[in-house]
Length: 475
Ligand code: NAD
Ligand code: MG
Image 1: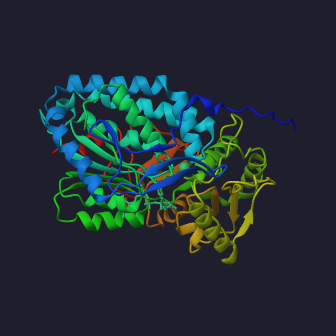
Image 2: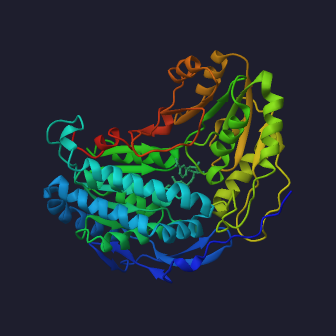
Image 3: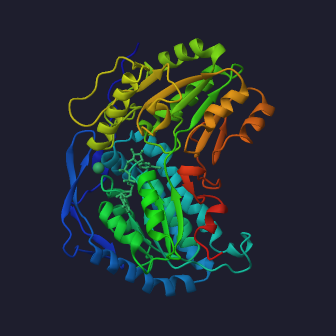
């Protein structure tokens, strides 16, 4: 085995201010009464900056600014709005190295992923929806569909900038204005995005960024002058939001958790399937709502596949997220690490067998080794609950019908994967799997042109593609 020399990306490419206010009406303002909280690098526990936690009064200021800007923004011809979105997309490309380093610092994800996956997709999202802004009349929602007004958007910490792009790009293309709240552990790229809006000369108030935790999010979602709520995060908070906006007339999209089945048939190309399983559950430390966290493998190939998978896991490199050779970065927070540990310990206590490759964890920061559980029963909590970490539960099946039964036996329904050489079986499976996205012989593949969203407790509404416009139009 060759050892890899360190190949660190420079953190000097990004300037982090010691403290940040809120971005409201095109200006940086201090919070009225909100406290400053630290955001840390989860790989080292180093404090990166202090960020204001916006109060109800701050949220109210931001919503008023968005309301005022709505008149101007929605009255612009689509072709003019498109120019701003194209400009933002180009600036994101130009500043992508800076954004990728900042994302890896604040979130803990490997630079290889923030640089090669997150940032290209963020730019692609803005380019894609820029293209729709002057063609809304041809999207299938009538000749001149109207925007909704002010969108209140709350996003999680697993793909901070990508989730921002999923929310802001379609909202602006359709003529809405936005107040967005990033997650409390990963506010920094959203704040840099605010700078980019200013750099693009976006009219003041069209995009407002308020930082904070759950209370700030609740103040935004509950604000009476918000017309549209878009949320990505836990099913628990999603339920609370659904209750609080019920009867208010606000339009809502919820993108919640998942417990996806990644189903491997005996005729699948095994080496490709192994790569797909690794990408399905160890990409982004498993902090992925559509992660392939349940491996359903046909009984006849279980041993062969698991041997190959374990060999592959032995080659994954865990460590410094800014090292270009790193495959697995840090867990985003101490709280998330505690949750992963708790569910994994429970898996063992319930009788499943736990395995991890030999792998040394750094002393500082939040880390969890890639982990596989075999001998998992459908009733085990590790087979039912979202771990949101690098933990794979392995179950087996004999027939395609049994695979479908087991895959659908979950309260979630966000995504699924099917690995087989047989095209007709892919179609047969896809028509029976109760999941918003079904990948065939691949996994965790994203594209701005493709709609994404869930069934059942994974939420409702679609983001991405032409379908994603509907959530931001009065139709
Ligand atoms: P969370 O749902 O608490 O947080 C997501 C976002 O919602 C954050 O911005 C948070 O500040 C905000 N928020 C929290 N309470 C709110 C409220 N009452 N009203 C409005 N906004 C509120 O998720 P978490 O605590 O960060 O993670 C917990 C679990 O959620 C994870 O272990 C994982 O299972 C799941 N999760 C799923 C996704 C996803 O992409 N579907 C993302 C993050 C977390
Ligand atoms: Mg952080």
